[in-house]
Amino acid sequence: MNFRDYLKNYPDENGRFGEFGGSYLPPELQKAFDETTQAYRTICLSQRFIAELRRIRRDFQGRPTPVTHCENLSRELGDGSCQIYLKREDLNHSGAHKLNHCMGEGLLAKYMGKKRLIAETGAGQHGVALATAAAYFGLECEIHMGEVDIAKQAPNVARMKILGANVVPVTHGLKTLKEAVDSAFESYAKNYKDSIYCIGSALGPHPFPMMVRDFQACVGFEARDQFIEANGFGPDVVCACVGGGSNSIGMFSAFLEDSCEIVGIEPLGLGPELGNHAASTTYGSKGVMHGFESIMLKDEQGEPAPVYSIASGLDYPAVGPEHAFLNSVGRTRYEAIGDEDAVEAFYRLSRSEGIIPALESSHAVAFAMKYAKEHRGKTILACCSGRGDKDVDFVVEKFGFGDEFLAKRAAEGKRF
Ligand SMILES: *Cc1c(COP(=O)(O)O)cnc(C)c1O
Image (cartoon, rainbow, N blue to C red; front, side, top):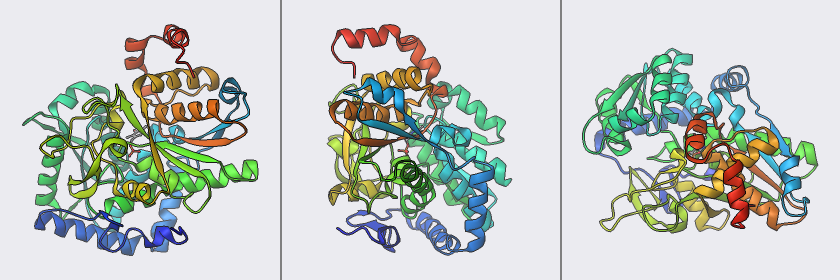
């Protein structure tokens, strides 16, 4: 397949990436999503919109974020001739890449004359990023969250409230993400005239996979320019962690026409048994859930399977449809990295480079480290999607400060 003009031609006008994507919604909600699609298709071409988003990226978010050459870490692996580089989304305002699409969605809401942003959140990262955008644009923000998650994610709930968001507790069913999605959809169906729904990754019904990809593409285009300026050539491999697939699709979209290998890193959690991981592309199959068609993990009834990862931002039972498509045509491939490998990467990047990565990002770093150990004279560019401050308490409680954990890995012959 030829990738010239790919970003203009995919998805098609129905939001399809080949056989994946689309929109499967009840009529009332479909009407609301169609309105967002129409508005986005027009507004995203407006010079005023583009100029304002550029200014926000620079003056509020602190973009461009740098690309850092991890010289110490590279020296420690293999014969030291394979070089690891990181795109530093941990340095994006609010500490992760999620703000890239939330600011885009907020600006779109402003141009559409909406007064409220509605979303659900699981671990709370999307809720915090969206509340940040709402505060910036002077919009109301309504975040639906299961009661169980509210209890587990107290610091993120506090952040959302400080930022002025209305956190709506969801008290029925299992009181987690699935019920929060239903509750948010219900509120949106009632209020879409003055509200916009904001999905937190490159998934869901059209236009979100396209819109979130476009808003995240700054990650990849910046990184490609920065890497080439520093080295005179592009990287041999580009990788990023894949939950729903937003930081990764943003990163990948700039490199599709190049000859580099592109690898998405999924969470293998505790192992390949269903329920122990969230490696949707690696172990999943085709299906429709949550309003779109993609590759997903299903239980015996064909319902979304239970998933697990040590990184709460990665535990989703499907991938965005564009990943399913790029995988099907062979332009990207997917590998799974387990909890313990990610935790080793978390400690080693911290100690060798002075960067504490999010546990999600640690999956991409772990892959880069494994790759560097096994290859000679190559360059690999990984996306550090977020900073690890949010994970520090949990990691210390479970694994300590790293000495023992790393010594045990070495003794077991598992250390990278
Ligand atoms: C949410 C999150 C992810 C996973 O989401 P994607 O949409 O797959 O990018 C990865 N890293 C961090 C830091 C996150 O907060």
